[in-house]
Length: 326
Image (tube, rainbow, N blue to C red; front, side, top):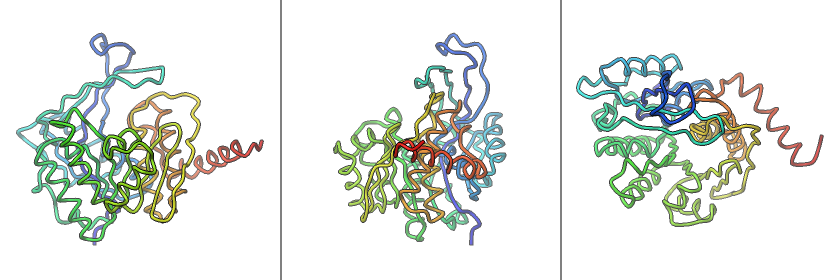
């Protein structure tokens, strides 16, 4: 039996982040980090003490070595990250913002090593992991990556594992919107927990109301649907319950990138621990709010000690503010 709690897969890119504000064309100095929604979630779960396996490909280049080295320092098991001698590691440029606005991001990932993931990339030992987290990014990378993503989700579902799915739409990577909607919903139908943003849910289902969006995915086979509402919190729905959980107030937004990944970390970690859905959404809201207060895609993701020390305090203060207590 595998020692892995979670299997996650996708593309981790190298990221050059501007050290000064302004248009990327005018920036002269950058520093190097990593980026990727799938690996952000993997890192967040690792920081909370879960044993996480990472499945990917990188180029036989310095950026690939940097990516793998950084992931290993975060505790991810990278034995199943293939090194591709023919295709490069993807990377991106990211601007610096100091006013809470979304940063400018330019991607250089077409034809990357990770886009050459395929069904052949699936290693049998990985299928014994307890849980699989997937997003809609990998299916957008290439036809072969899409086939791998769907096959992996099918095999994990058949093996009785739990699956979570975040649509994480990347329209620019798809040939057309209709294909994106069809393929994303085909993947979502395999997941137990589906985590769209409100805008994503409206595009993917054609419904406006969160309750109707959630019902769409419950009918496809999901056990729980949690819809991210940004600073307003989240709406959840299962076969037996539904409701809104208010967001955690934030005094100053530093960097919005990675908030949804932090939300996924909170929800998945709590559900894997056997917490009920309302507590899981509260933790998800809190980690998402923490993420936007830190510069960087995954720098704000908490350790287990930070979660224990800060989460209960933050939730208690929020509860008192809603009841008018001081």
